[in-house]
Amino acid sequence: MTEETSGETSGEIELSYELEEKPPLPKSILLGIQHVSVMIVPSTAVAFIVAGAIGLGTGDTAYLVQMVLLFAGLATIVQAYGIGPVGAKLPIVMGTSFTFVGAAIAVGGEHGLGAVFASLAITGIVVEGIIGWQFDRIKPYFPPLVTGLIVVVIGLYLIPVGMDYSAGGVGAEDYGSMLNLALASLVLGIAVLFNLFLKGIWRLLSIIIGIAVGYVVAAALGIVDFSPIFEASWFAIPRPGEFGFVIEPIAIITFGFLFLVSAMETVGDMAGITAAEGRNPTRDEFRGGIFADGIMSSIGALFSSFPVTSFSQNVGIVNFTGVMSRWVVLIGGIVLAVLGLIPKIGATVAATPDPVFGGAVLIMVAMVAASGMRLIFLNVEMNRRNMVIIATAIGLGLGVAVRPDALQGLPQAAQTFFGEAVIMTALSGLILNTFVPGESSPLFDKPEDTEDPTLAD
Image (cartoon, rainbow, N blue to C red; front, side, top):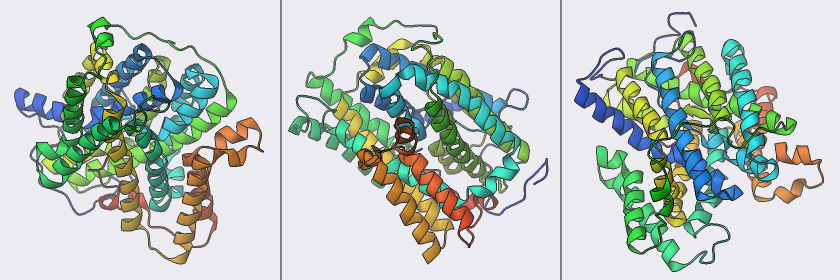
């Protein structure tokens, strides 16, 4: 790679608006809101899932949602226009990643959210700073075989979470009731049908339309608690250290490894963005994007936001619409940041009934797994070597996820680290792919073959 370009590729699309072009302001606002619409549900889902798993109340959940929106918006602004070397200066929409969900639940449940956010604040800037600095040396170790396995397992091990929400939430008195299953099925059905049989904006907004319909039906049936929304203020300033800070070494190691995974996701999405121009990202774009990933995640953690990363479905919007204008994405980032300063928005999202949310979570996490499968099938030859690596990595990753008690003979710190499905899958896939003879096609030399950007993050 050179400083100016990392290589030309074929496959550019006809762009309606190029990188530095600005559509008329009314159109720019609508295009920016469209970007927000397709990522706001999966982005806030991370806060919702973690809060529900560790038993937070509605008020704390609403605050987490508020911070997720605020720092997704700020990180999007930084990625689009940059601050010095920080930011790719590309139309990249940022949001919270499912990569960190399992570890956040495990660490938060055992040590509290203070340990989660302290670890994130430390590891984000350190790990992704090193990755950005030494990017050329690190990237060969994460070909499509390894990154695809990571994405597959992220989706697969979260499917039980979606099922629990669909049934009414763990511990609910009406868990598995016909009403809960009907609400979840309604949301899931609308999302699937709109996505498969409609086009344009109706397809892009299929999930949020499903949730909206489910929300309205649940409200009509009297199972939505609106009191937290009425009690929430219209404007609030973020509060640093809302859940305190606790230093836990094993949590720092765990999240540090996951930031390595997150960086590779962002690298793939940057390649998907620039593929619209028929090129790979430059070295400065790669490094700036990774720096923004880590630094904004660390700053956000100080205010109780989960880590931010690039959102693949928004890469899909760029390629689908031909609108590559970073001005449009800047507007989307501003909208997200403003929403994050309005607690009523967070309270409204937090009031979503579990089965309504579950129908959407189920399809979102399954689509994550599907996108990882596509990444593998398009880029990896299904020979004996690669199939054994895939089988081993998925077997170990899902094994510790569904049977965590199998590790009870290990020290507690080792149980926390190796009990994470993403870590076990990534480590086994990375080690086997590195030391077993044979090669995988390099992801970063073929951006047109990266993860399908139309799929959920």
